[in-house]
Length: 510
Image 1 (cartoon, rainbow, N blue to C red):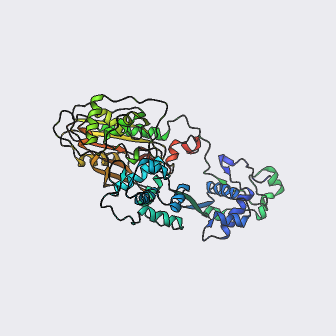
Image 2 (cartoon, helix red, strand yellow):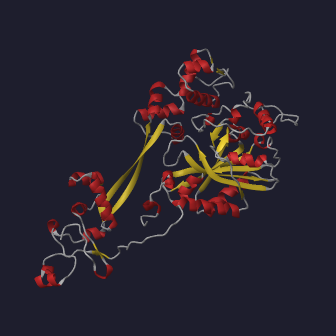
Image 3 (tube, rainbow, N blue to C red):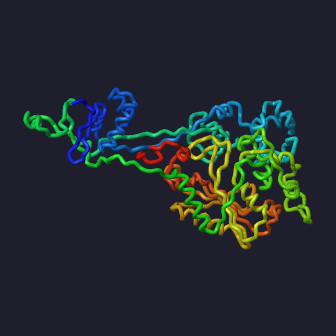
């Protein structure tokens, strides 16, 4: 019989065949029971191509003849942009040097002449203002009493460590550099193989000789059964099973999550994917020069014109941004952002970067308290694609407004949702968002990726709700629904939620 062929088994049993590579690898696995073999060791000993080794080992595993233990290793590295920043300095460091050389004041034109593009300049200015180096407004000016210009930033320490080959760095700073596209994380899987108990007991013909697959009149008459070993049968082999059509696992889970929210008394709302800067950021009291609103994070759209919001609402939002009293009120709510509000900028079209825009549109309709609303839809950001980030991502936005609502109600909603989908580990910590105060973040544990943020939220600031005509406290959140689905569905990479591979979607039974 030709090696690798399969003979019919008795009573539906499946004959267990071994190809020459499978037999050779099984003999190696049995040769050294401990410690387990790495694939590279087996490739070196067998002199087979690594693809043949991996394929044959997987077939041995499917036949219950080999066991595998898998480890996952992550190693951060500098991207080409990160390597440039390591050599030349981060944008914020170079901008500080430019300010120092220019006597503490720089115009946008001089920054451009010094080699800063809009993205680098916006990132540098945003970071330096948050760290109290810069005054507000234009031209860009050093504060009268800034922190020491020689202070080494945490990002610089991490860049230097990675540039020198040391991967042990602060994870929080590392994640911030990943979002800026300066650092990437390489992941590799290390598999350790050993023969199973069945693999050690399996009879193997010496030198890969012939084995009997069945008793026939010919083998009985020739008495071959006395000298040849019998090929084992795998009585657990499954017969092919064809499944019918089914919904995509992610979409089915989304529908289940929507039903949970509706059961909690929330009404569902929708909004356009193509938004304007007004609804995507201005009405949420995000400064128009906020770094998250630059091309580094938001996808801007050319060739179309955005529709302006109602003039009365624009004036109310502009007053809050500029620190003036809302028309019809005596005093200002806030000092504002100390920069003029650009009404032209507010109509720029963008792909929606957060479903909070839907909440703003809902609240602008002045719903009668008490009200509960959620929106579960797609958003778009310029994120590097990795295991937990995607250019397109789902978000579940929600608002809860009535007298007496506070942060405890929001935590209760998060705990109820986590419990409803079977997530048992949840921790809450304080946070900051431009449009909520106080703010919190809820983290759930992924079995492989560790703690990931999925429940950000807080109480909407007066600067957000008062211009919209809302007088009751409003709790709001923007759940990272795709990350939450990864935990609930046991998926290790966010990209698996978007695949069209039928074998993977149906568990190999399509």
